[in-house]
Image (cartoon, rainbow, N blue to C red):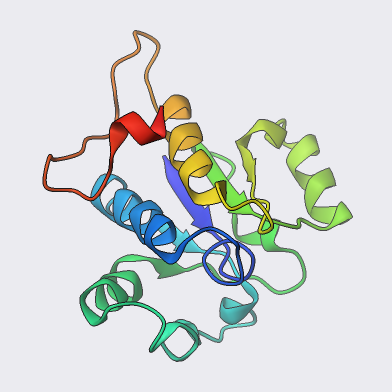
Length: 158
């Protein structure tokens, strides 16, 4: 399953505590290796300004993982141009355009959008829960994992 991430309103500029946003990013990096994509204006029209945009905003080790393990998804006019609709995906986005919403609907993929509300302080935690829920297989088997040393407090997440 591919995961597409916006930056503004999802990773930055939210009321979610920075630690919660870091948990979300770490969870994604640990569980969706090779399937993470930046889908943001910072990767539009062939540019990739992720490193400069995120520098000094996250610990260096996490920043390096974000820059090296999350690939830029190039698009020109609408972000949905970069989504591979042929494979399962989730898109973490705060404000899709009307054209992007129509593209999701036309591909019967509107349920693949995880609406992110930057004004909700629980947004990052709620996103983790939704991703966990949507990435279980038909028998309820987890397609993700966590370790006790991870910073997740699963009691808090439920």
